[in-house]
Amino acid sequence: MWIIDLLVFLLILGVLVTVHEFGHFIVAKKCGVHIYEFSIGMGPIIHSHIGKDKIQYSIRALPIGGYVSMAGEVEEDDKKVKKEKFMCNRPWWQRLLILCAGVFNNFVLAFVLLFVIAIIWGAPSMEPKIEHVVENTPLAQTNAKDGDLIVSVNGKKTPTWDLTQIELIKKDSDDTYDLELKHQDGSIETVSVKPEVKEENGTETRVFGMQMYQETKTGFIESIKYAYKKFTTVYVSMVRTIGGLITGKISLKSLSGPVGIYSVVSDSVKLGLAQVLYLTAFLSLNLGFVNLLPLPAFDGGHVLFVFIELILRRKVNQKVEAIFHYVGFALILLLMVVVTIQDIFRLF
Image (cartoon, rainbow, N blue to C red; front, top):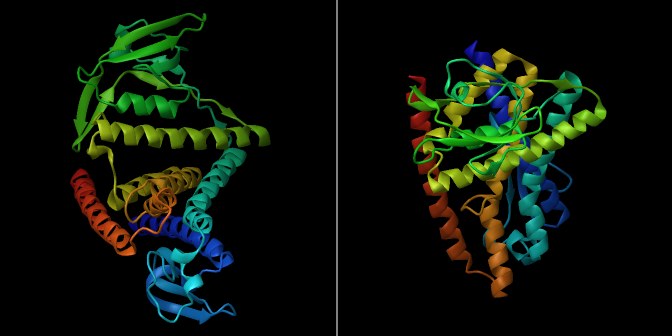
């Protein structure tokens, strides 16, 4: 039912943002920054109280995240607060800790969830091994065989399926892909494949003709290994995706906004709890990664100004920084609108 999908979507979003903001909150508090409020949820207040620390703790009506309100996040903005209590006036290393704490929390959550998935349901194999070459497909026209290991795609090393898939969605000028394969006898061979391109709901899909090898391992050590390897692989995949977007090898059509994420959540609910937890881990890692980028309004954008300050050995004009974040935030909102419209067209 759509109502269940919506509740799961809001729960995931709420958990991810609250975990992120709690990281900022707890480190800012330890560093002596004046905090007005820590809120779970957005919108109208359902319940709030003032703690012994004089911070307002709130639960708000809309379960779409949360926030921490601190004094002087960019500039001195409250005459009632002592100068040393403004975040912008704290030592540079404390500001870095505060800014990166949310990302750290998202990364920890992602790792823990991946470990939980593996310990309960088993650790899936990540080896880029071809289980079966499908007949009458582009790959079947080459010397690829069942059991081959994909070593690289177009010269890029692919130690896992995730990284293999990223390289296979990148679009080259002639749409031909060079796959370096390791046969079961140990020999190495490079084959060239031109995939069959299909378009559905405005999205291009490249059909190569392979089924991935699947194996599940169990145990505490295997679960730790899986969580670490999956975490690092997804992170590297995101780095390569950003590179592909910049070079134009990956289309903006591959991006999804809230509507697209909701659609994925709906599919995950149908597949069960393990898939919902994996999606939560993936989105948590994604949220942490994006926030590290040196973009306006993101944590990474604020970190960028801390490093500029260290290089210049003086404070950056706070009004210039504020304008940078406001204008950047407006551009990011515009991108979100474009991506959301794109998601809606996919649905209909």
